Image (cartoon, rainbow, N blue to C red):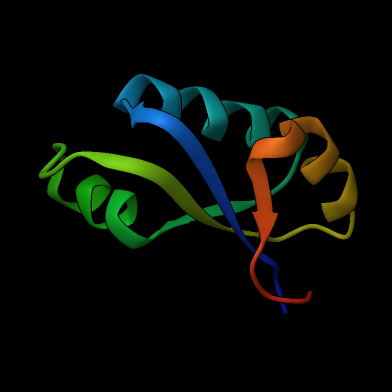
Length: 80
């Protein structure tokens, strides 16, 4: 099972933040799937409401490296 990761922000998370995080996962060769509110917004093609977090499924055996790269803002919500 892929780990579900929630990246939380102390301020409103902008679309540019989401794109930057997505690119970081891609650069690390970690398949990622947007979930939650940002996942819905990606399907809509626009930001529908303010967000303070980003939920992603990370499909990689190197998940611990990905969490370390995100610093203290990343929280593993499910074991994986």
